[in-house]
Length: 339
Ligand code: NAD
Ligand code: DAU
Image 1 (tube, protein in one colour):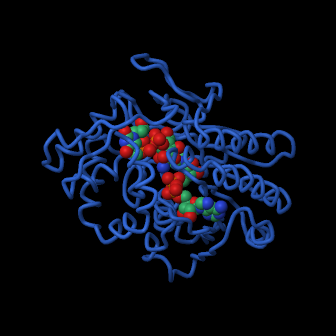
Image 2 (cartoon, rainbow, N blue to C red; image 1 turned 180 degrees about the vertical axis):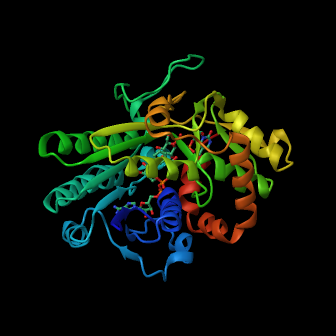
């Protein structure tokens, strides 16, 4: 049956990929995209659907209760992506992370409850679990205790706790996905993979924090979209699923080496710089639950996903070049004091 989805943060990286995916797969559904258009929001990502009769864009803030209430009246399902998402920015300026990620989520939860929303899906991160040990075989699962280490992950952990509390205390039907590092089309070039591609293309050194042996689990963004779809369509509520894309550890220096190899650039473009404060050294995700209960699998290998991603950034320089210029101040502050 056709439904209305309120998607928050739909002009960002994952949110815009999700809206494009959902509108293609579920053309009968209506999408309301509520996005404040911070530095990370970009309506160009959604140019192909902006005139679609089932797509409505609303520029606004998730902390604005009056606006959220207005939109919630017509909503069946909330898919909540809106957040401040970059760890380095959270180290420099934690305040907006607290406001958007914690207070914003709380406003949405209050409004969802007041309007008896059928399903509230919260997009979270594996970073809430803190850091695993390098060289260990332990993995994050739905049972892993929370131990966030950055202002970003602490704010996301708070939002997860609020979502569960609204489920337990007030009976809100919720689900949470804690997924790993996404990569792919439309990712703002501040994150490692698009930063490395955009630097390599113009023969600029690619900065690697510390020794570069840190490990992340990498999830192709289209596979994240299918994971969210599986959760929404399962009809399950009061459940959490962790989502990852890999089954082996790939250190950051290998991630960058893969990009340089695909782009035919020399290895020595990789440059070690001062480490990130409080840097989590290893994330690894055991995604057995979503695989066994919902039949979800990633569709691409890391190599395949990286090839698609490199190609997209090479073909879409008009998309990312202006973002580098407009965000010069952040890049200067974050990198100029790293030796
Ligand atoms: P992003 O930074 O690319 O996009 C965030 C979007 O939210 C932007 O469009 C921005 O304008 C909007 N936004 C920010 N503050 C807002 C506010 N107060 N009100 C309304 N809109 C606001 O983020 P992303 O990488 O697409 O991440 C989306 C979600 O997924 C986040 O909740 C993030 O924590 C989570 N997540 C991301 C990753 C990843 O690797 N990128 C991994 C795990 C989880
Ligand atoms: O794990 C999921 C998380 O992944 C999401 O919740 C966050 O929103 C998302 O930003 C991402 O966080 P990370 O901090 O892991 O991503 P980032 O791309 O910033 O960094 C990936 C790794 O690369 C990390 O170990 C830091 C390192 N790095 C990053 C940058 C930007 C570098 O070595 N050099 C860099 O210039």
